Length: 439
Ligand SMILES: C[S@@+](CC[C@H](N)C(=O)[O-])C[C@H]1O[C@@H](n2cnc3c(N)ncnc32)[C@H](O)[C@@H]1O
Image (cartoon, rainbow, N blue to C red; front, side):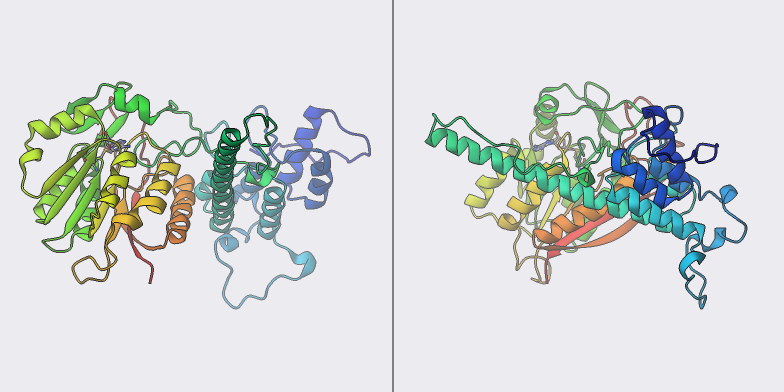
């Protein structure tokens, strides 16, 4: 991974671009912060080796692979030994040098989730090498970058709204500064394409077929239904039966007793709705937008079930009406398809508070809500980043999140992905969120 030759000598002249790239990668691999600082004055922390695709972050981490470390350094990589004095001054270990190099690169705008030719982000590499502290540094960098990107998105939207208003008020005024808040902060850079809230969540560019899903196109597309899956026209998994255990536990935690009022957003295969029914709710609302799924609901007799109300349409249109009508709920589950993280965030910041009863639940301590936590689930580092991002955003919306870990079986081995365009789940553990009113 790290270039093999020794560090070329520094001169006052600017090296040619290819040489400059190699020098940055080498300095990173050697954890040579002084040289790196000088090189980054004119160079970028996001260069990539033309042959391996490695970035300086990859190089700084790869240099800590056990075979590259001096004897005795390896076991200290995850946890410092107890009662061992902190190394002083020059006695910095290679691992500490590596961490400081990573910090320097991140401060200089290194992208946390660039892929090398091995289809690994720096975080994937740190995880594979067992470099826990470095992995956490990359996760934290990812969280910062994603939170900032999401905020910038909001500001841009606000800017756009303001512009529209201005345009309406004074049409002759044509000078707009719609990018005012964008800034040029490299630290906000991230290679995270659309984060899907549910299935199909490419949280980092991957070598697998990238999926360009959008809600409008999905809602007009043909679906194919079999006993164990729903696929869209492009063979993307809309819902798959391997998720049944996740749905089962989610239903148990959301409806711990009978007689509760529940809303499910996104019917899909109806797995969670069947499970909700087994908990004998007093009211069971289902919001579903796809005509083919609605037809299935009708054929299966859901419209006639006592206590069940089917709301046909998108949650974005239905929920404001439910709020207006004063509907109050003890539990809400959210699992849609082909919607991005912004949609999930809009759901819990704008709507949950309007329909979830603060005095609801079995003991009157407040309603609960949950969602299918599939953000970035095709890559551990992206899942860890988005689990933290979503928890922070949920907190900001006024809810605490409790997590329960569920083991996911080996889906490859079980042949679950045969005939499916993209594996949207590649992890061993599902982190199930249960959100409750704060305090
Ligand atoms: C992943 S499936 C839900 C699976 C479900 N949890 C189960 O247990 O079978 C997603 C469902 O959300 C629906 N959907 C997607 N976007 C929607 C929207 N904006 N409003 C309402 N339903 C939507 C899809 O048509 C699909 O039926």
